Amino acid sequence: MKLHDVRVHPSASPLAVEDQLAWKIAQVAADRVAVRRDVAAMIINRIIDNAAVALAAINRRPVVSARDMALGHARRDGATVFGAPATRRVSPEWAAWANGTAVRELDMHDTFLAADYSHPGDNIPPILAVAQSQERSGRDLIRGLATGYEIQIDLVRAICLHKHKIDHIAHLAPAQAAGIGTLLGLKTPVIYQAVQQAVHVSFTTRQSRKGEISSWKAFAPAHAGKLAIEAVDRAMRGEGAPSPIYEGEDSVIAWLLDGPEAHYQVALPEPGEAKRAILDSYTKEHSAEYQSQALIDLAFRMREPIGDLSAVEKIVLHTSHHTHYVIGTGANDPQKMDPKASRETLDHSIMYILAVALEDGRWHHVDSYAPRRAARPETVALWHKIETREDPEWTRRYHATDPNELAFGGRLEVFMNDGRRIVDELAVANAHPLGARPFGREDYINKFRVLTEGIVSTRAANRFLDVVQDLPHLAPGELTLLNVALPPGTLAAGKPGLF
Image (cartoon, rainbow, N blue to C red; front, side):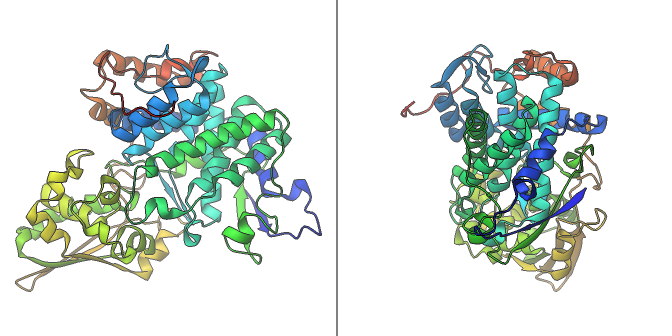
């Protein structure tokens, strides 16, 4: 990896194209380096993962809305839409919209956390949609996805968006554009313009994940994918973009991030260096915000020593800055303590999540968020006894560069009415690569089967799993085989709109 200095540059002294971050990203995307075998295997795992969570959410309202919108843009040589027959094709940017929303709705696919936050599996829907519509091969798709994961994770390691209240899709859209560039074998100048356009149109605020969180949380990454495909299309036609998109004196770093004196160091692969960043990301076993994964596992472990939950006086979670201020009491969001809050809000309330995990000893992507479940008086009572506090050591470990130090959990301190104090901690989730039960291929397959049971037929599930595991050998035009259709008559339709 090579470190690249990124600073704001005055217009009076033009910055050479070759010195711009967007150009360097484009060079990585255009580099036809071979994909490592372990990277290709993990890409297959994450395609399985995405399909699992998308199909589990297939008839939830936001997914239905996105799908109905997409199906209004039929195209004979287009891309497939989750749940619909493979014969129903739509324009690729709309397939990315529908499938990206389905993948994101349950908040249960992969994650990478560093200077900023990300769900790099959000790269899969737009890159796959373009691959299908352009009749590319399985190997082409693998190469494109390796780039998408690499660029997003490299940006997330280096440039913090959250502290400026910018949503993380600002790192996703350029990664998606770069991945599409790799997939199609585009030249560096074309990818450069596509990356710049994707950056320019994807900077939005984090209000989408604050206060009363709406369904836009699921739509946002899908919107980024749609924008990325459109950016590539314009660049292929010879259209340019605002430049330099990162370093310009009136551009994103100067006015939306660290300001005119900003200095970032972004590490990107050297020419000929394999793109392996996907191996540093991790998926979710539980349908909840990633910082809650280890804490759900910890709550399960603490149920026995705690015993009678009605005898709890209070619970204090000592954790990282992010967990405290985004999903904890440090967010100062009253909605996070409201039993009538939306599923999207409860998913971002570690107080609610801990209460339900302690009571139930299980976590279910539907049952654990049901309004009747959230409104139980004993749950509300326990929920309101939980508070979070930032602990500098957990914050340090959250940002650690040593994988053995990296931690996304916390220490749970339970005070009982009889004066006892029960304390335990967990650094990483059981499913994390360094956890008690790291996810492997069989775990991804099991996750797919559990989440799709009763939704797709056994025959359709088996066919998909056979095809996806043979991804490197799929010929041009065969990527539509990755689609999974629901049985006839089971795909819901929503309210009419414009499309």
